Image 1 (tube, rainbow over the protein chains, first blue to last red):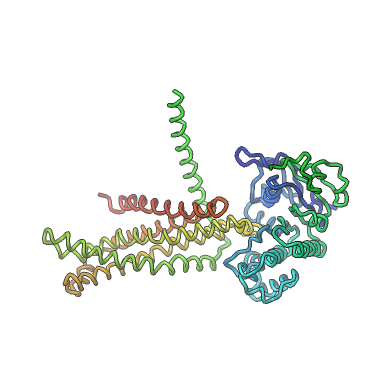
Image 2 (image 1 turned 180 degrees about the vertical axis):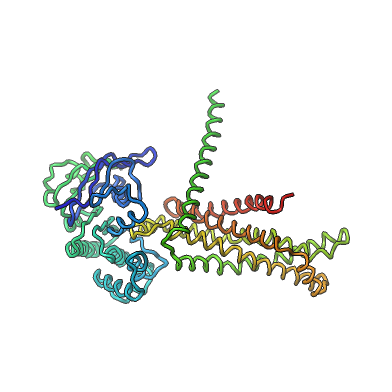
Amino acid sequence: MSTKISMQDVKKSFGPKDVLLGVNMEVEAGKSMVIIGGSGTGKSVTLKCILGIIEADSGLITVDGMDVAKQRGRARETLLDKFGMLFQGGALFDSMLVWENVAFRLLRGPRKLSKSDARDLAIEKLRRVGLEPETADLFPAELSGGMQKRVGLARAIAAEPEIIFFDEPTTGLDPIMADVINDLIREIVVEMGVTAMTITHDMRSVRKIADQVAMIHEGIVQWTGPVGAIDDSGNAYVHQFINGLPDGPIEAIR
Amino acid sequence: MTLVTGFLASIGAAILGLCQATGALVLFAVSGVSHIFLPPYYFGELWRQFIRIGYFSLPVVGLTALFTGGALALQIYAGGARFNAEAVVPSIVAIGMVRELGPVLGGLMVAGRVSASIAAELGTMRVTEQIDALTTLSTNPMKYLVAPRLLAATIAMPILAFIGDVIGIMGGFLVGVGRLDFNPTTYIRTTYDFLTTGDVTSGLIKAAVFGFIIALMGCYQGYHSGRGAQGVGRATTNAVVTASILILASNYLLTEALFPA
């Protein structure tokens, strides 16, 4: 397996606050990596650094061997074409209809389709995530949280990206809907053969979605390994986190 | 001594902060303007913004101009009567509206409506990660969100100001003829005779600059909005306040440049 995403000694600070203190991580092509860790440990910043939304202070991030920081203009757009992302809150464009959200990438840019073709494709993707075609002509505000996540998922896969990021995909959902979303993510990752990176606190998600797991704490990757090894990791941080223990190396603010 | 150095340090920090904010705003403006000229172009988004900023501001600008023109006619009549110069009402109303009040009051009204709306919209998009989502969809937010708003406002504002000028002069005409017993034909002829092309174009140039300022401040404050409802609220307030101040300041500078004493 080739390495799809590589991070070497990536550091990022916001003013006096050091968030990433030297993150090292490799994600193999076609595999699903799940990043776990407490709130405010830099998981989202890690994803945003890979996307170039946040510029890392130092270190090297490569996608398919290309240095992310050096991509500008058209080259950067080509790099971003490889990505799809499901945001924690959906991040749907509330001024657009659901199908326009899903087909956003297909209505503009080099792979632009006609409006009717883009709409047909959007409806197909909505069906893929379990939504009726009637949903297409609603506005995001008219949908429930679970439906918004599904639309976000449909948008993330609409242009058939090579890499998909999932930022806390089950946060705010009831356990049944969370499980439905987990299943959908796993199915899509396997079916499309994409490389996936997921941030979550939900251990049920971890066990369903992950091939590999990385635990981030205090700005560095404390442990990484296959999901099957997580219960016997021998790492105190992982042990405390996955079992939700109040005592351990991770200090809980009470 | 510590008190003095502390005082000087606070002044220095304030000046550095101002320089930093000015630099950031200028870089943002340069980036926004460069994206107007560089492909890809989002004509659909430009048209939508043109309608939102221009067309939907027409009632506000029109009513402002109508009442301002009427009030101006009454004031000039009352003031002119002190030295038997009531006849200057049509010409002064026209010049006052076209050179100054049309673009400035129109600009301030549009600043209240449009700057606030842009800042709130972009601020909410920032807070709900919609701007980040644009990036992940291979779309540059500066090009998709900022450039169309800057261009639309810069084009729409002179058109609004021109319409405001006409309505303002009409307001003066209605008061002049209805309340001050001016002859309608004489009023219109005097207005037409006194106005020069320079009067009109100077007002339109001002309006274009004001339009750019209105969109720039709305976009800048919204794009850099803080987190939560409070962050968006602050961005909206800052957008209206800074746009209004910059309109008044740039109006003085433009007047100096266009009509040197």
